[in-house]
Length: 222
Image (spheres, rainbow, N blue to C red):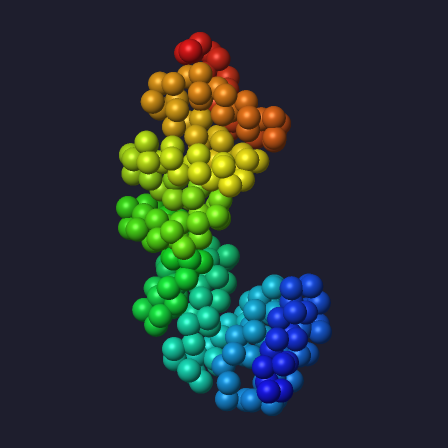
């Protein structure tokens, strides 16, 4: 009971950004149950949050040495690799997590994002699609899926995904910009201009939207 309480206490501290208190709680959980991987993963997540990723990786590896099916450890390692732009290793970790049973929307999303960052939009598509099914109200998941669709030439499907992202987050300027680009591609200058203007209303320094607006106005396509 002590173990769960300490882990739960630590997680609550993490939510509040109280990293020292969280670390103390997880350290006590490790002392109480040194063979349980959960507290090691949690401690690693605190270290990652404060930027001590090298030590964090040691804690994730310790968790995996205790339980090779500790899916959260692979997922957390993937996140560290992704943030350091080591997308190949990130992909490997998210794939391992998936193989070992972590079929969450977040894991599908990060696996898709890793592949997309590696230039493999086609391979990323099914994972990003699955992430939108599991994370139905996550605007970023729909946006990234839309980007991947557009890159692969599925413009109409991309437009649908961007519109869904904007319905979930009306101030998602990158979704508005990319929706403008998609409409421009389909030679609907009026809709393209509307999207660029909406993006610029929210974020006046959105350079790409500003450039798109000038292009459309220069062509005078209506």
